[in-house]
Image (cartoon, rainbow, N blue to C red; front, side, top):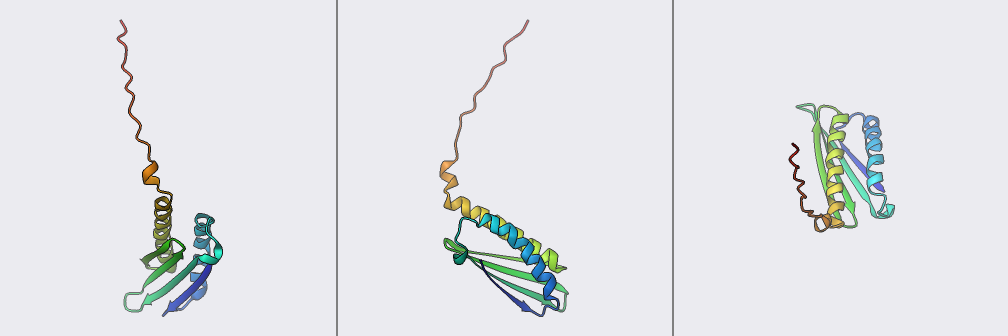
Length: 119
């Protein structure tokens, strides 16, 4: 996976990188079927100086399409966690769509079992 991180007005880069690495391990488990050379992840971290709020925007480029997620938080950790949890749900939804899960959903009839009258 090719990774690029851009920082805007962020003071400590080390804490952000550790959180990103931790969450990338989770994403790599979901993306193990893709070739690592074809996957690109671009992250932008920004700190709003007035409100002291952090924002994170992540774009994941896959062979089948692009996924984008954003997250806001009071700390780096919450910001990254929200962003990657949103991205993880988008990946699962995207892969389900590629597998065409909506066509394979089984519609089974309900079998009713009637109780016998016991005297």
